[in-house]
Length: 586
Image (cartoon, rainbow, N blue to C red):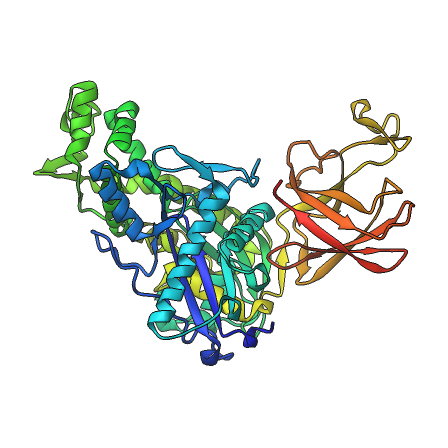
């Protein structure tokens, strides 16, 4: 279907800390400014701390039958009540689990993740139920507005970090399909790209930081960096503005797990160092309600900590934490603060603890140091980096006063660079995903993050191949698991670029053959074999071809340049298309 044949575009931004969606009716789409009439629901602003957000926490509550109970603030609130009543063991509660896909080594359909009390469920089920919850919330909103639409009348866009590999993207597509979203109507969007597209159309008044010129004023040829800071990851890439809202990627996406939850981990580490790891572990396990409330409050106060903050930050420390301290080590929290020599940095007024500003700022330092170091590496060591004139900060963590201050102090108005931050940095990704759903061709080219290759079994050559890899197949001595590379890391590919590869089958009587596809991060050296370090299994490519009782030549086209790898195959002799399917999960 053409984009204009859909009733609407709906984008789901499933984040580590917060999730949400945005949509646009096709009848209200303006190709001159596709950002108009993109709607984000306001119904997420719930919870006891009344956090102002157009998103909801990425928290999922399932009943004992593994059916969806609720999601977001409602899931947090209900689970907190269940903990108070002692009924939480009859439910599954998952929070901040997206980072399970940051490293996909060993990921498969049976991979499990643990809930708050250690009960495990398949990761695919947890992710699919979360996507289902957002889908259901959207349709309920539309029904309330008396808008009736079939799921196949919606073009769905699902965002993922650009630093995720193909397997993680495939996992999210599978989860979306299990959530009831037809895969033929689903597009995967890369988060920094989506935000980049959205900001192309923003005038100067839509930026909270950036001086007197908006992003829309940038001329074709402008090279700029997108720093997408979310709850889990820092996703950094470099784009060049082409024309008419189009852009191309000139530096492959890179980054690391340096998002907002990194700061949360530092806060937990601070408290654990004061009371002791066993004490804090017991508090988390036995006082789940209070632990969730503590982290909710920290989420609220950390937003206002800035680089130049001098005021102490007040937080309510749960009585149950001090009680747990007394129970385990026979000292209360105040005593342990003094023993840890933190009493000059943490003082107490009634039931509130006052955290010294420098102590709070220190919680951000590891994350911001890594982000700044990574940005500097690209700006100074890469050719495209030296051309960067704008740094665009997007994502929820970019709304943090501290991270804004640090990036501005390092780069704004230095070396001819400007730092731009949209006013709604946290929702620029999901709104941009709607724009991408309308105009996917506006990303004209991308840079490959990995090399790609296939496992082959050439005839064994003494002195060239390792003796341990000798196998006899159909009477021929062959070397197993050789990595045959067909695309190089760092290659700039236009959308739809096809790489043609030819293969011979091994069994003359078969009607299907399987190729094992691998990726390699081989910036320094290319692995010779698929089981060497840096080489990772992507999936099994099954190709079905006509029966002919002979060795057959198969032509495979690997299609690059999109957000996902596409593959098609042809039987050379008959010139007929073959059914080709890449199985990423066994």
